[in-house]
Length: 312
Image (cartoon, rainbow, N blue to C red):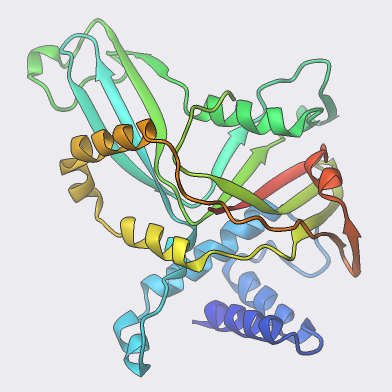
């Protein structure tokens, strides 16, 4: 498990705050290059692709490892896959037969579009592609999430019912599809698709603790980050959600109606949990430069690319 080992060594040294991390960081990057050789020395690549390669490599190594033997040394391990893993519920409604079909899909990141490309947005064009900058970042995220969860409409010939009688197999009505976040992850990663919502009330609250920023065009530019170093990660909350997300998809399908009803009941009750107050302490990180910035500067930034949230 070369990638997992190198990431563990980097995080361990970072936790101890002991000296320079260059050797450990190079170990992580070398392990990533063995998975995807596009991340060669001196090349500029996409940070979202790097994140997916990193997580995908960790997940593959863990899938192929004997977790039970790793746990024999004492104590249980938190599976890193469950920290980022959430679950979509996909609902299909068919006109001709009135059947309702429910499916579940796992995700590790949410990729949302930029919906509002009005005069308030600016764009850099390169070979037919555009890098879009949001004038109002918070509105852009909400509108993108709304677009992700909006109802899609298909002709039943395109998307026929897969569970009803054959006489409706070639229906003449509509099929309606909607994707919703059924089980949120402890750490939510949102990717804003800048290259080319009105959110409903939920019973989960996330707090932003890191932002990756891209400036420039798709042909070249610069990545830097904002990080909240005082974010007190609520590990107990993570473990609670991880335990809830361990059910297999077949079981979730059988229990879908019961779980959905419980969710509706929960939304009717007033939220009673206290949200811990954490004083924001944000830093700007660009290559070797690390300087403090205000929370207002972070939240008003117009070139955000990847957002990291922790569940409360």
